[in-house]
Image (cartoon, rainbow, N blue to C red; front, top):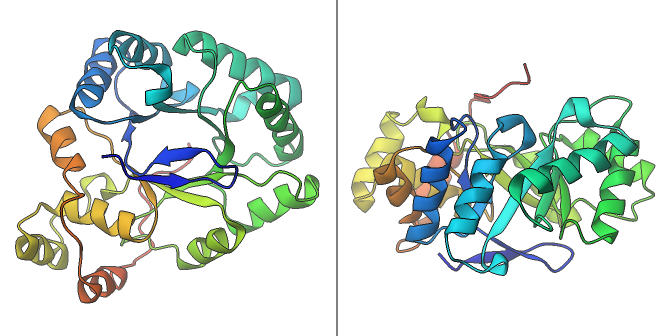
Length: 269
């Protein structure tokens, strides 16, 4: 699990992480993150919206790992956007996590009319070393273009975190981010279990003697994505990290690529 990608500012991010979206705050999150760190995960993705930053922080502190051994992502929520609000939101997240800095800070969703000021705040936070890299989440190409125009292209987002899997294969966004050297990161890479029984996926999984979930994660890795599956079950957390000992053949990659149906499983409420 040592595989990493280098972001456009030189910071290295582990290719596989654990997401804690909808993981209940308290003991559940703390135990899940503790277990993941114990078996080798070094990348944890949370957000202020999730309400479990403090539990992620407790697990990190109790892990015995050095701070620089763990990559932590959190995000500024929509109602906290704007210049001064974003700066305050970052401070609150750091306090809840019990950390001096986070490795990656993301704008959780694009909010019309606030993106420019929010991004200015993000660049300030970056200069002050409260975060090591900044980026966006749920941004489409036009959202990123708006951001770049507002900042005169001075500071590129390091990451765009979006829902991404064979059933939501965002080819244009993928191409655009590669050209701009923005790292794409995939949340809900397992389709929130909505397509784990798909016939083509099951057939490919049997061929490699892997689970459908492992095939989906491997597909993402071979598309040069950072992949952050979530689970609260120890056996699945273990299963999800056993994806570095095989390679999908080109024919199988193309077969999976062909499954796109624009299936979106996460929506802004």
